[in-house]
Length: 313
Image 1 (cartoon, helix red, strand yellow):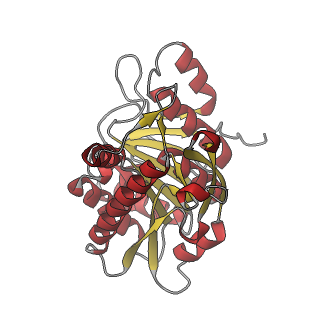
Image 2 (cartoon, one colour):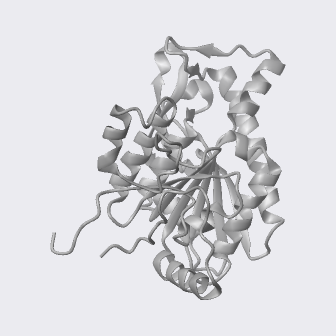
Image 3 (cartoon, one colour):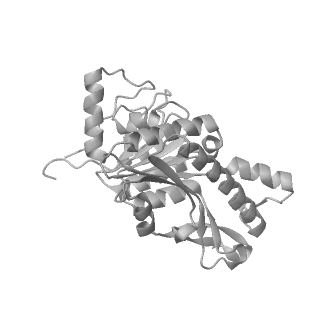
């Protein structure tokens, strides 16, 4: 049986529901997401905009304020702040042959510091909104939450990929057994046991780190908050739902292009790992209530899901 709330047809506006419909959606949401993991990732542009961050956190408080509902974790980046700090301090930015930034020890120090400052600022903002729902700020290396390995340490590049997620550590922080409601906010500098040159730190792409945590925690929903409404068709209309089986064809026919290709392919891989009961939503984090709309089944973005099982299959 498909227990995922239905999405609206392709559109950019959210349908207007009467009070009965809204209450029914909310009760369904509480039942479906009670104690289920929901992960969200918000990018550098959003993470550095206090008004937009405040709106994201407002929704988190609403989602977790009652004794029922999801267990949330968030991951943020901060690439713009890192780039600005490198330029200001005269730390040379080094790129590889493909134009990707190399994280050498000097860049790592700046990245860790700037991401840490964003994290602390975000945690303070979150904790000003609620007394009973609190954010816990973490680097991914804290408690060895995420272990990673460098792509090319031989060439002084300590950007890398995730090899392990300490799900037990994260579960303890998110647990409601003590009566508290903690939401981890994580920035993507992971622990690297082979990275002595950078004090055992590995710089991981924020999207990748968030996705790996979502898969390891068997999240019911993984939400990518961006500055785009979702996946658009060739007429620039929002595609509200996509099966993972449809994505290759949309890339081949030119519907999904350029920077959306790796984002959607990454979402597809996570959706396949989460299976029939899960899904990945790409939504516009600049707009009010977009996460709530997604979880309440009111649409507003693109939900990417594994092929749905039919009765008797």
